[in-house]
Length: 208
Image 1 (tube, rainbow, N blue to C red):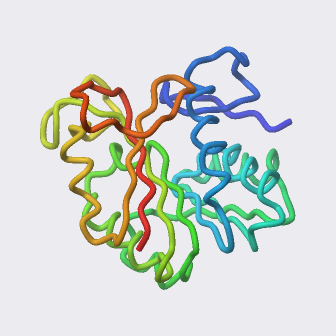
Image 2 (image 1 turned 90 degrees about the vertical axis):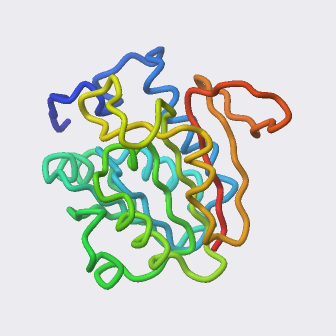
Image 3 (image 1 turned 30 degrees about the vertical axis):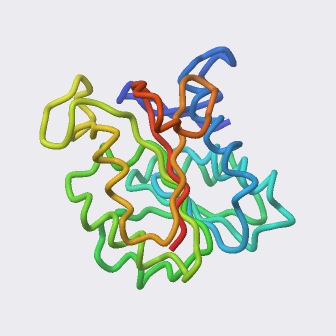
């Protein structure tokens, strides 16, 4: 087995975690939640060690052509290539804000982006890349934790900021349709706009 040390306090490495670990459960829940919406050519942004891309490759092997997992960290990509090989998956080192990323990778039917945008300084370029890489009619499934808002320091030293729920919902104006969900632990359910309840984390399924 490949060995990888988590020096961030945020990286999910299933082989080094207990099955009762809440963070692991939350992250896996998002990938399993995505399974019914995944098809064709798939991109997993900030794939980390590749466990999520592997879930999709295994669970959706009859629905997808391939899944590409990208991450800026060469060490986690090396780990993914060794630990989570699947004939339908591949992993490569890329910067998700690289202006040439759409040219490098092409277009996708589905793009997954879980717990990524809060780490990114240039989120405008990040979202532009996503939109360019989605085929017409393609689907984006994206999640992020909520906090005090853009431009406001948050409790995590690894997050640029954590947007509010309203800021999150306003980010997808360019998309034809969008459905918002909230997550609390392993539970993911549609947002009830009639109830003013704070949710720790949001997920959107948006169609170009």
